[in-house]
Image 1 (cartoon, one colour):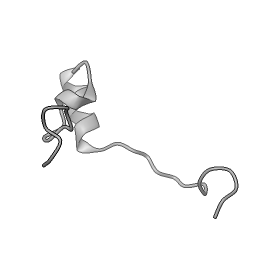
Image 2 (tube, rainbow, N blue to C red):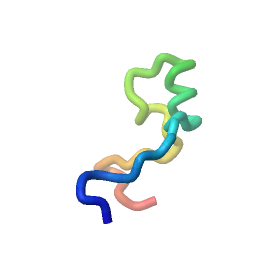
Image 3 (cartoon, rainbow, N blue to C red):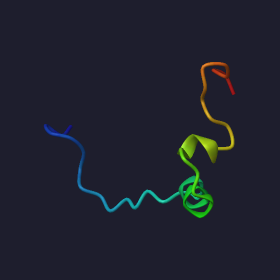
Image 4 (cartoon, rainbow, N blue to C red):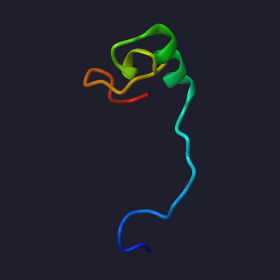
Length: 44
């Protein structure tokens, strides 16, 4: 177990939702996620 945070990694973090958000210039990434977690929709 690490004392401070996680181990170093080279994760880029560019998923399809972020690409769609970038292309469509959406205000929030939640608008591009197929099944967002909202208060009205707690379960899948």
